Image (cartoon, rainbow, N blue to C red; front, side, top):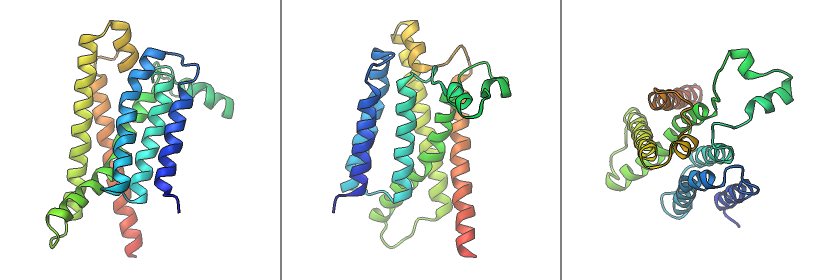
Length: 212
């Protein structure tokens, strides 16, 4: 039987390839897909080694798909307003008074919400391999998972800072998508943290429901 996770990986890889067709911002899109390829390779490795649960794997795939969409329009130009207006006849920006494109905010929130289950699976497997007779307490597992997500998010913000220092202003803006917001990095990390806490809250509620 063909591994379903590998089928999902192949489909996600093909989606990335299709997204490169008639690229709107070719140079920036290829740069955006460096982390995409790294994430896909990491998931491919996990299918034969540190195998993730179905929920954690699904979260990882969902995040990569969101990132592929963002890379297609380099985040700052994702036309979610046009899509929403096509579906509902109204504009999200008009309804909420938004002055910028908020797709990057969604993806940073998703990095916490979808990243925490992946980190939890990885930490649990690492712990079980090192301490086979001692179970990792869930509270510590989720806390450490949130720490991992926040650490990765902070490292990515440092990378964006280096891009801003090394690339031309237009290229840096196209990749980082700050859109003139001086507090963009802090807001991004805050949203990742909120997303991670949301994932922990959903897991806790689900655990309580199953217990009842």
